[in-house]
Picture 1 (spheres, rainbow, N blue to C red):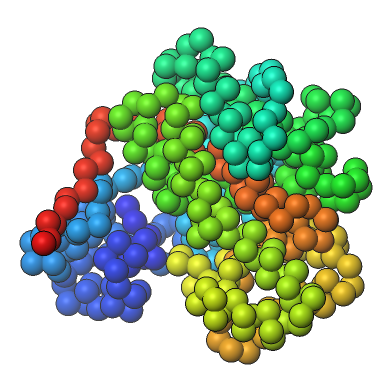
Picture 2 (tube, one colour):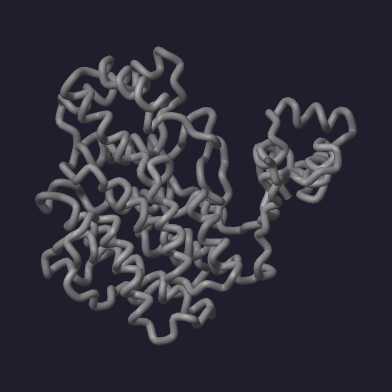
Length: 379
């Protein structure tokens, strides 16, 4: 069953239009016993979507994907296996959230990284790609697609991505993923608390069928091994409109501090046509993850930085720019803690291994090679 928001999104209409379909008898709604609102049968919605296009399949549709991993809720944000990500971020370790997404039943599993050898002197994202290649190359049974093998591959991959970020004090070698990552990203041990990085990892762990997650599921559908599938996700996440959005928001804050909020926003709008860190295709009333992460980011900001951030947000609101999203909060955390500009993408990449592996496992239960878009040839 689909929620009201999911059904409207699938049909490409607004919620009032969806209910107009119900009143006209084109679609049947069902009472949601667990919440206010309605539920809609997936097959009914799909049939109406086809009829509304004169019997033609949707041009952009690859396949209908039913998932039990994450549900996106307008007000609550992502729900991981029915649990709010914003609440998990305040009380659960990233590792435990990953095990929840995987339904592994292995809370005490090993999250150690393999020996990667000397790290190449390249940018962080390239080191992370290299780390995944090494992980796969050193796994003698990388083609084992049984769930325990896949989750073990995901744990060592996440740990390897962290290890590739930079040097870490020896006393952090067996610490949590959040503690290891914080120690590598911040100039001093007290620059940002472990709980702030952990919350960011939890909030970014999954977001339903995001573009990079689709890349992982496509790889899974042809039965690529877990490491190659994670590489597909990492390659897609690298784009500036996905995982790289927080770095662009970071740069916006830096320029706003130097040149003033008005000039910074105007220059970015002129050059890019949009403000990084603002707006979301799902959350029209604001990204719930923004407030949860900003509450942890603000204490790391100096008074001047905090004033700049709020001036940027207020100026955007005064000109009807869409509300800020999690990328801005992630940028504020990185900026305030003195992390490198690409730290948001680094955190995002490590976090999303949890969601990618969960969707990979789910896709293995589907018919292989089910993703086949229909091309319309033009001359």
